[in-house]
Amino acid sequence: METDIEELRAKYLKKDFDVKEFPIIAEKTIRFAELCGETADRFLDPNHKDFQASPTFVGSLAGSRLLPSDFPRFGIGMDAGKGIECFSPVIPGSVLTGKTHLHDIYAKTGRSGRMIFIITRIEFYNSERHLANSDSRIVIAEKQNGR
Image 1: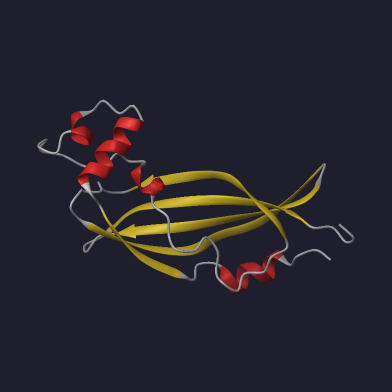
Image 2: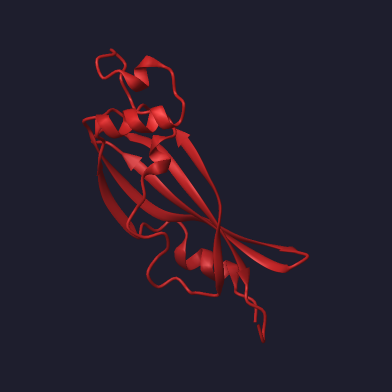
């Protein structure tokens, strides 16, 4: 029996299921920038007037859960990529609040059967504004009857 995508969307989309705080530590943002091959001083030098985490740094932050605790299990999930959207710089020394929700759920059918895609989004906020989004995509090969 196929999973009802519209039912999942109605029950789970856009509803926060995890909230977590992330202290942004300069040494960690610098090390992340170095490992990514970053060369701009604003990402590497804490004395730079515009010192900030590199834009992809929020992609290294993970919430406590990837899916809601009551989300149904209907196959084996695999990583299907990440996406980052930045609105304002992330400043070391600050604390971000990450709010996680399911951003989208959709299905595609291919040679191997139906695949369900789930996008989990963490929205990152400081005390003043929404700074960035980090999307994690999961693809699930839906179990077929008898398999």
